[in-house]
Image 1 (cartoon, helix red, strand yellow):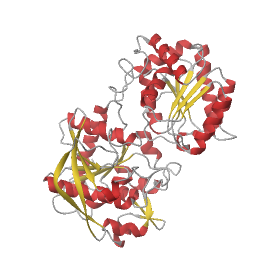
Image 2: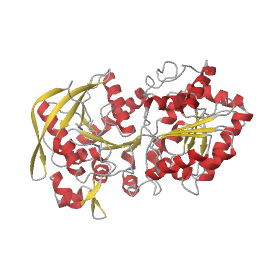
Image 3: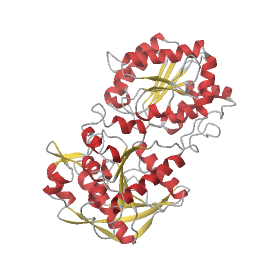
Image 4: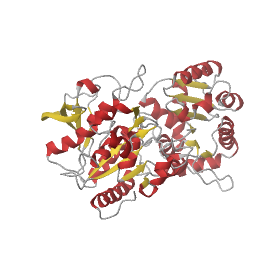
Length: 491
């Protein structure tokens, strides 16, 4: 696994959770899985083993040298190798900071990661059958398999590249191609060229043996102009090699039956205990105690991709009308774009039934899932999503836009039969959010038997990593077969 994030060492989003969980499940299945990632200076190495000798990594017009530390992940004892280079990783931030959202030397930083992965394997005398890269920071790994490492020990190694979010592609000045030790012929021939710039993800999409996304619906969506971020043509060209594999969920960390971070544990058989969490949630957010009113929870990055433009955009968002027109309480937990944080502060001051905490707080995130009655996710696009899975497990009915993993995991209520696990809308607009929230609230007050049935059904849903890992094993074999010529390439 070549990755820029890995729980618990470094995380900005679901990528970190996915790589850690998939690696652990593959290891439990008996596979020899090893992870390589940067050693950011927020990672404590006091308990890590230092691998003997600095690692020489071809970079730019010479070599760079990195120390290597080794630690282990979780119960599966997956080895994680940390490439330590003070000049490139000895700073705050993974990809950037608030002041510098995208580091100008990211091509150099993640070239060191990808090229360093091959150098590390050689130094260990361990040649993997598959190199699995994740998102644009690891996309160069598949390019190197088709260039510098095409012959030699990696000649039969297959490559898989997982697209966690196509909206982030690693686009930099074209002259940075020299940092990769590839030339202008590769700039065009290996797929880097992107309107006169260098696009790392595009090159990875062009070179990997197998492409995956983190949900089946997202795999279909990114082949369209609406969701393809200008990569839809290439992805349609490679459609035979593109597969959607739904992420699993960590049912040990997110389990209302023994969750230590919530007020009171419960199961689908003791749902009446959920009310104690709702009371505690209202206390945390300073809301009036009224058990007759439902609570709508939100835990999210506060950004337009997550639907906040339509939810609370100044002058047109629907949140003010939702809180004003419906007998409901709303709690929002998260951080993000400054305009969104400012607007939520303003709305909270005017709306007594809106509570906002602009923070990342894992304990509160668990309490929001346990104490809310509904969970709102109006994402513009959502490659997989985890919070809707958490919500289902906690009997907190999702209200979601039908996109990506949300479409694959939440079944819309059939008001005639009561079947379903949530409330789904098709077109993302402020009005659609308002109407669907209104539908959910109306069902709460007028058809509680359907709400109760949906909760029980939702809590019994399972999205297991063992199923996802089994599918990845099949795709790994396909990658190997294509690399070795047993199955012809489609491009």
